[in-house]
Amino acid sequence: MQAKILHFAVFAAILMALSNATYLNILGPTSQILHNNQSIYLGKVGPGESFYVLASSSTTNATGFLVNIGWDRLQVVNLPQGWYSQPSPLYENPMKTKVTVAPDTPYGIYNITLEAVNVGNYSRLGNITAKAYVNVTPDVFSLSVTPTNIQTGIGQPTNLYITINNTGISDDPFNINIFGLAAWNQSEEVVALHSTKSTYVYPVYVNEPGNYQFNLTVSSTTSPSIQRSYRISLVSEASLLNDYSAVGQGVVLSPVILEPSYALMLLLSYLHNLISH
Image 1 (cartoon, rainbow, N blue to C red):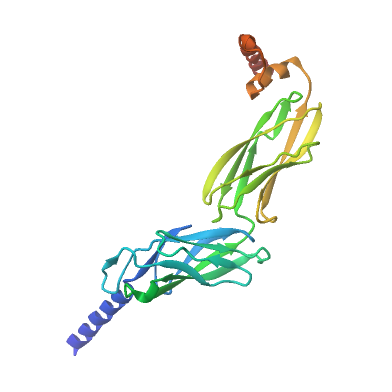
Image 2: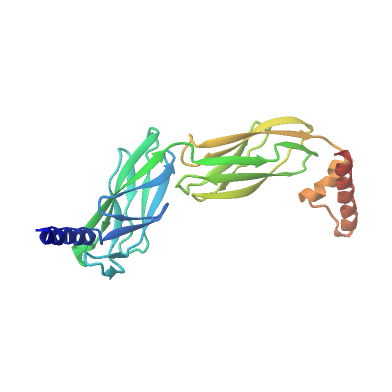
């Protein structure tokens, strides 16, 4: 009797192992190996943003034999209302399906159903499905800007260093803009890839002396609710030392024969700054 129970337990374990032999290897935006009906948390995404799910086409069959091109397509078969997706091209490896969140999606946790397809069941794999969860939130990146207090001359550019830490799963572009600075209408579009931190150089200047307060804003190109701002103070005044320091900010002076003089002017401005601090 005990021998029969043992044999049954071993047989059940073998069946369970075989039933879990076929898998879906998720490669991005996070990585995890999934068996049928298992689930994965992908990360954060903003309303209106798009993201990609990447997966390998390789898997194993029910006997554990490796099938290099087992899955022929990755697609999404269930989506929240207003969302849409694009399946991966047939026989792409790695497979990549695109998902776009509806712009009016309320914040919260949502799930989609991923399906890996063996077209025509040629490799005898059938299809495999898995639940993928995402957190819809505007909190998908952090921002830092330096310097925030600027003293410069008239028409002399000062570089702002803007660091975007994209903690979401979307690669949608961001716009860098300044609001509140008279006559300023220059914007710059940058791409901060998901799960990366990147620093961008953004020069600013004014053509009139004065004390200026303005906001530097970084915002998603696809979702107005995704933005961060920094308050910047800029004092612009005309002075000989400011003209000298302009050489260090990249202002081009001519003719070339005067370059040794420019170097001396820049050195004088550095010495003045050291003494004054």
